[in-house]
Each structure stands twice: as structure tokens, then as C-alpha cells.
Length: 298
Image (cartoon, rainbow, N blue to C red; front, side):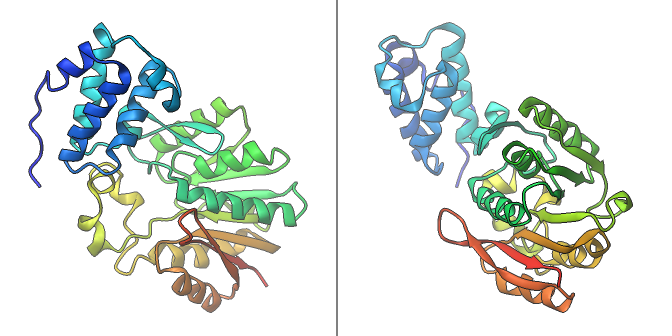
């Protein structure tokens, strides 16, 4: 599909003369023509953020946008036409109870991963609540900070290879007002201070097979870092590393909660079983796709 021209004024009449609701409809029409998925949702979210009102209240605003706000909305819609994700345009993402700043080297946290947090919280509760949690490859900190926020009795640790990503994750933890201990580490390497003490290990590792990266939607392919997507030839390289490297860190009755891609659950369970872990089931996301694999240390 050819990209829309980068032009100004394409929404001028709608922005300057119409109500926000009518402007949103025109923006959605233009986004749809450009092949943007869920065009109305994108147009509404951008307008809602701009005017500081919930999406459902946009129809209650009688005045057209004015001045800088009109120009800003127009620029945002143009960026969305070029398939830049709404979260990148706004500079933040919403995840569970959190508003998370985004870094260029971290994935945009998505609703699918909320089911992984739910599974980790179940494991925490099964162990009595006050346990030590480790999030490998934390990115924006979405998983780790959510667990610290929702189970404040836990001691939550998180690692990432990128120093810049850790800087953003620390800011997100500070914004949430929750203590999370961050480690500059390549997965489990160098976390000897946690040896034998991790009760719940959780991770959303890269799991896209290398050959499939170019076939991803532009919002992912062009805007998420490939280091956070590329899982190697079969998409399972990072799971092999997690199973091989994390065992010295785990407490005797530890649980692992790992996010998986579509159709990967059985393969990940098999890898875990071969490494000496006990598969304990799966959890589905909002679309009823299997999104998390649970394993135990026998």
C-alpha cells in the first residue's frame, strides 16, 4: 500500500469548523482510507488525550478546536496515517492501573500481557503474598511495576540489558510510587545476589521467529525494537536461555510464568520439561488465545 502524502491542512476544515466529535469522524475516515486498523478508536483516543475528556464525552463538547490544539491534533492524525502507534505519538501507554512512559528500546505494553500479570499474581497469592519476584527483560517495567503496585508486600526485582530502558522503567516505578529493584543484566546473568531466593520468575521474552519479523504489522515492525521481538529461528531461543540460566536463582518451590506467542505454548512446555521443570498449565488472554505458560520447579 502506498503511504499517504505528508501534507498539512488535510483536516483543516473539519478541525476549525466542526465539533470535536465531527472532527474525529473525519479523521477516522482518513485513517480508514490509509488502511489504519481500528481508525475510529485511534481518532477518538488522540482527541480524548488532547482535550482531557473521556472518549464517551467527546460529543458533549460544542466548540471547535482552536489554535495550537487544532494544529497538534492534525499532526497526530498525520502520524497515525503513517502507522505510528498511538502510544508512541502520545509518549505513554496505559497498562492495568499504570500510565507508563515509553522508551525507544522497549516494547509497547499491550493488553495481552495483562493476563501474564494475572497469572503471576495468582502464583504470588499461592505462596502467601510476601515473596520475591523477578521479571526478566522488563522493558518499560509494565509487569514488574504492576506486581509491585498490586502486591506491595512482594520484593520485586527486574532486569534488562538496555541501560536506557532501565532508566525509563525506574521512572515508571517512581511515578507509581512503588519500590522495584532494577538490575542491568542480560536476563539472569549476573544476578547472583538473588541465588536461591526467587519465588516467582516472570518474563515476556522476544518470541517472534526471525523470518516473520518483516511480516508483522507496521505498528510493530517499524516502531518496536527488533531486539525485543526477535526470538531466533523458531522464536524459542530466549526460553531456552531462561530455562538454562535461571535455575540457580529459584527457590525450591518457585513458579515460572512466561508469556508465549500464538501456538507456542506446547513447545515452551516441552522445553521446560526437558530442562527439569514441571508444566502447570496455561492462561488465556482477552481474545481467549493462550498467552502464558506456568511451570514449577519440582
